[in-house]
Image 1 (cartoon, helix red, strand yellow):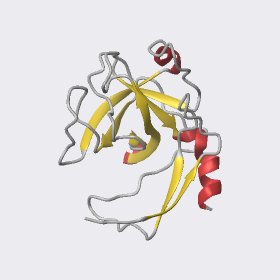
Image 2 (cartoon, one colour):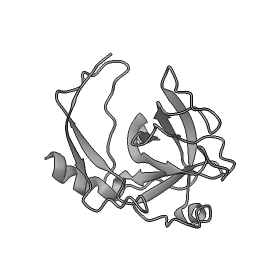
Image 3 (cartoon, helix red, strand yellow):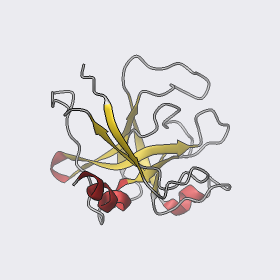
Length: 169
């Protein structure tokens, strides 16, 4: 197990809590992470690299294990989710606007989704040559602790690449 302290958190300056838009931060740790067979880096997409609807990707997290349980897992949870178009996604959320800075993924039946405690976690998709790419960050959703079924909503990492690079270089 590796333990690191957070040195700095850089919130996106346009973050809007009311509509959960620009929901991204850069976290600087006090020391580097050691790469192991269980800890590996993930690729970042280019600003023009978009994940297409109907692509299957994976989410992972340590959050609550369901909408009827406040139980936390003892091991990292993972789930396969399908990317859903922004237009289709918007049909599930009357009260919130789905923007180009967001991605939607999951199933219309709500069978696989992130939950409380998973926020900021990865949505990764396998690219050609077996490269895993971080396309989304868990933001908010409909299923966990809700009666509404639908996909989860993720921050669209491709949209923020230039901002991320300005923070780390």
